[in-house]
Length: 137
Length: 264
Image (cartoon, rainbow over the protein chains, first blue to last red):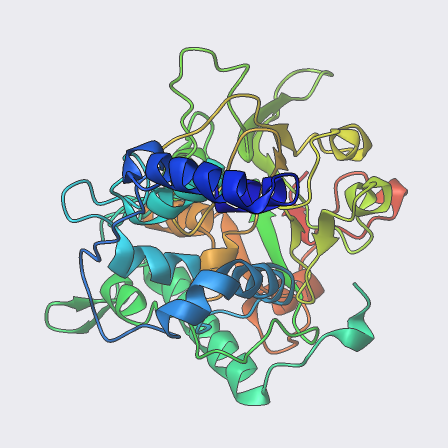
């Protein structure tokens, strides 16, 4: 909104521009026109965070991208970066998932920034889903 | 992936995995998997207790070549415990009502000798984890690959679902997932638009366990499947291959499969 105002500013004489700016600012101030910022609630906050929220917000996708190569192709397990590890703490307490509603961890931000999260087309977004062979000893 | 670029796992890691599998294999052979190590402690419980991933920084080793030896004379006709165990472990749902659509990582094959028909055979067929896998050769994106320890896998992140590998595989071991999936095993990510096949239960191997099908076969008392390191001369599987006649399916293709059969 503000960027558009500043571009128009060049085309107006100062008094008109000021009036226009004031009028536009009056429209721009109510937050109702904007998408509400995501409210991130960590359901199971633990001490297992691998980096600060600022770092994670910017680089979690790169971290996961590099680790997936190591895990899948080179067979490294138990690494610090792990999608399962994220889900373990960040899954919603009510649904046990990081997806499903806009209150759940991954979906909250991804809905806000309109970036499709396709990890969970294949990966399990819920906790406690480990399956075993069902063989009884 | 060239083997020169593959980081080697420390020798201790190899030994512990080998030693564990060696112990479980010999114990299973001795008492069909029911070994009371202490009152109330069974081999399986021990196995699950040990089932943690190793620490980070350890990689699959090219010194190992995982393989399987299947004794078709012990494989029971009509038994499908290996298939059930595979489906449970890897969260494959065969009961979708459309069996033609569901993935098949392992299947049972019943054979009958045409001349006379007296000899009947039953064997499980799955990805043979070839040393020279044609699926890897033909993959246009590099999604099909062979891990350093000989396990042939699909990197679903870059698989485009062209199914060229399915056509190239002489064992018809691969399946294509053509509808969205739910309730996957967190350790076995599977999804629509990708080709998939037997992974030798790589998630279990990395924890020092054997494949689910082998475990199920041993538990059922058949003991028709033996899993281990083909490169380890002291291991049960290498000894059996050295001393008894075994064969490779379609050996003429010279793919050097990691799964060998006895009695066919």
